[in-house]
Amino acid sequence: MVLISVMYPAGAGTRFDMDYYLKTHMPLVSERWSSQGLHGYEVIKGVATPDGTPPPFQVIALLRFESAEAFKAAAEANGPEIFGDIPNFTDTQAAVQINDFAE
Image 1 (spheres, rainbow, N blue to C red):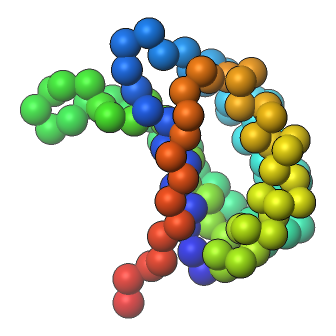
Image 2: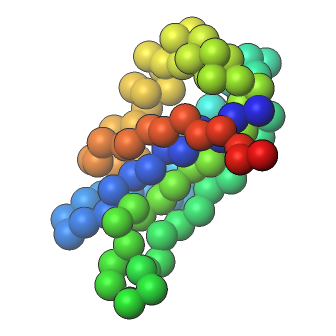
Image 3: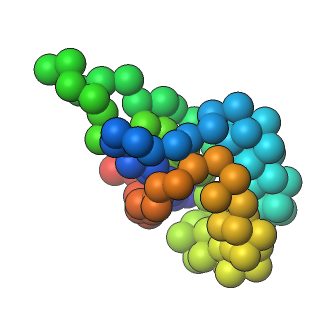
């Protein structure tokens, strides 16, 4: 099992439509990728850093995938549709990271 972090940068003037993201984009992701190794996801909203300054990321999606290979295959199969939906909810470029669980 791997955890894919999809991190949307925060910053003055950035746009992020959380309602669209939660009600349209993430259900699309789940629908397309569940049969391709997605075991679930969580969405977290950045609030602040410990010193109270704005967070570096406004939203982070954590996707649990069977393997890094399953994620790559899912992204290849449905990437154009899923990634093509991004401008509908944000004008930022997400950073994507593949993570392994520490043992």
